[in-house]
Amino acid sequence: MVAILLALTSHTAFAKWDEERDVTTNGKDELVYYFKANDQGQKLVLDKYVKRLIFIQSDRLYKRTIRLIKVDGQAIEVMSDPFSRFPEQTAITFENKDEVLKKLFLAKKIEVFVRYNREESLSAFQIR
Image (cartoon, rainbow, N blue to C red):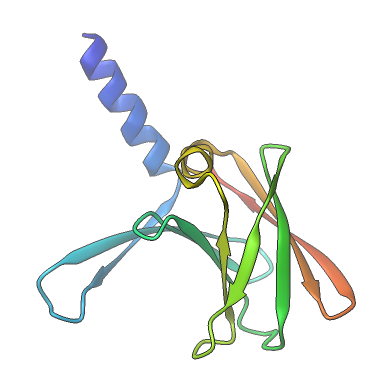
């Protein structure tokens, strides 16, 4: 009985995120990515393979920096790295990857603090 409850609980955690499937370049493997979009047209992708987040904002193509995210109100310092071939995407990485990844899967709200040159912005994602 306990095993069934644990299985249902873990599935529920993943069900909060929307799923996106992609096939590898060799066509043999199917990868599953989890994502959330917000009302501002931004997208947050949880890449469990590389253990990072990807922040996507297609209408602001100039350089952005992300140094902090909040997961359910808890601040986590992060590093950001823009994709050179995809300027609308920024990779968000963190030091303790496994611990942060677990928090992200279970999160109800993720806030991303983004800096565009001198302008700062807050992007919020509700995970239900």
